[in-house]
Structure formats: C-alpha cells, structure tokens
Image (tube, rainbow, N blue to C red):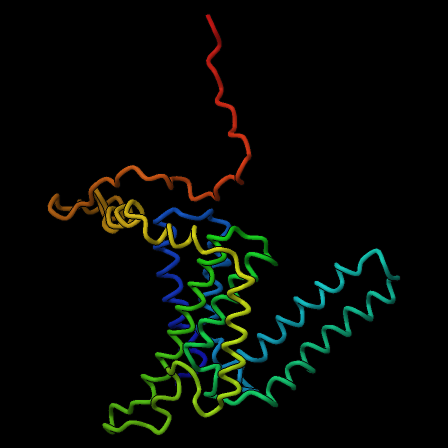
Length: 276
C-alpha cells in the first residue's frame, strides 16, 4: 500500500486540479472553494481510518472530537453554569477522541469495508449532508464537496492497488484486489451496515438537482474549453500563436460564481439615472 505522504501528496494534486477547473468554471463563490477542496484532500487519506495507529485515523478522530465538543458546548450555552459547561465540553472531547476511537477500531478491519466504493459513496453523501446541514452551505456547493470527497477517496483506493503490483520483481502482491472493491464480501454484515448508512445519508441529503444541472451545462463546459489556453500571451510575455489561441466563451447564466438568490426574494433595484 502507498504510505501517508504519497496519499496526501497525490490527493492534494488531484484536489488542486479539480479546484482549478471549478475556479475557471466560476460556478461557486470563492469562499466556498477552500472547504470544498479540503474535502477532496481529506478523501485521499480517509480510507486509512481503520488503521488504529495511522495518522489519518488519529487526526480524524481528534477533529471529530473537537467538532462535537464545541457543538455540545454551544448548544448547551445559557442553560448551565460555567463549571457544567466545562464538564460537558471536556467529557465530549474525551469520549469521542478515545471512547469512540477505541470502539470503532475494535469493530473495524483494515482493508475491510472502508476500502470499498460503497464506503466512498457513503463518505461522499455524508460530506454533502455535513456541508448542507451543519455548515449551512447551498445544496450545489454541498454536492460539489461530496464529489471532491468521492474523487479523493477513489484516488486513495487506486494508489493502494497500484502499489500492490511489484513492477521490479514482476509479481502481484497478496494485497492486490483488497483496496478497490465494490463492497467487502468477507464481512457481509459490515457491508449491509454501510449500505444502510448510505441509504440514510441519501435520504437526509439535499436534492442534487442544482449540482446535476451544473455538470450538464453546455455553457459551463464551453467556458472551460475557452479558458484552457491563454488567448494572447503566456504570463504576459510569450505571444500565443493564433492557431492555438482560445476563443471567447459563449454567454452563460453563471457569471459571478455566487450562490443563487433564495426563491421568492425580490431582485435588487436597478439604480436609475437622474432626470434632467
């Protein structure tokens, strides 16, 4: 299997490439691009969560502990004393970081259900739910973050399969085929549980209509094609030959990258020129 450094490096490159395309497509506000990109980087190391002593596992559970402890703290504020709030915050932090972490690793098996496309789908939809319901992002942004997570997850699985082929000794290691699989036949109950979790996440997630419509937009893809190469010069120095210069993008309803206005909200008034 590939090591942590390889996973994080390749995952960052892939997520950065997708982020560049997203920025060029101008479909979401810039402030949303950073968390969406981080979702892709996280996906590139997430399958190793079932390694008890791995850096991804420790970092993930530490992050979850911080997130849930502050969520409990903010939700309980105003109802309890400072001493009680400290106990709730610290208790949640320790329970998630060490209690849930230990319970999870007593049940999980490395290269088990978490190394599967089924788990990648669950993590992608779960990311969408978190972005929409916890971070209060627009549905299109939430599904884009889920897409980044899914791609990053698949990058991890693909790297593990590539590293299971020993090119120098022209042999295939015993681990080949355990990283990239639809689900885990060895543990049917774990696979069934993951499928049920995926179904629940899909039920909670917002509608993907905006995301699907954006991906299928001809104007968006035409705009990306027009932005692929410089139109006049490279970095303002080297002139671009007319044969390969990009052509102007066609008019597109997506021009600012900002989120659409809520339904029913009146449009901003257009300033009128003073009468003479």
